[in-house]
Image (cartoon, rainbow, N blue to C red; front, side, top):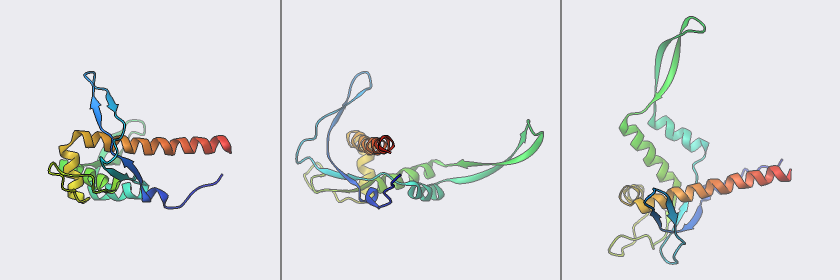
Length: 156
């Protein structure tokens, strides 16, 4: 079995912006990209990135509980998050997942929006259309990775 250990996933994948609509039944329809609407580079956070995010945004709490099967007390560890920690987790995730965008990502006056952590979060917070686009792009990256893995299994 061959494994690609290069850092290609960290380079990210560029997507032309595509709009979406939500139907009355709640289903989403993704429209075709329109040239010149902007491009965004996404990358899927790997295990080490997610572990780093977790260590910075979760607290481990120990509790003593009674184990009925063993008839003994034992200590269990439980991850807990405050609302502030949950918010920070989402901020760190999206700051990593959205690597860059081009000058066609603009505000309502046509001024390019710089690709900063704050602007990423503001765009995600204030635009449901951009949020649907971002989530769908990460889904596509994941589907491609799963497809490649299945192809490798078939070819081995």
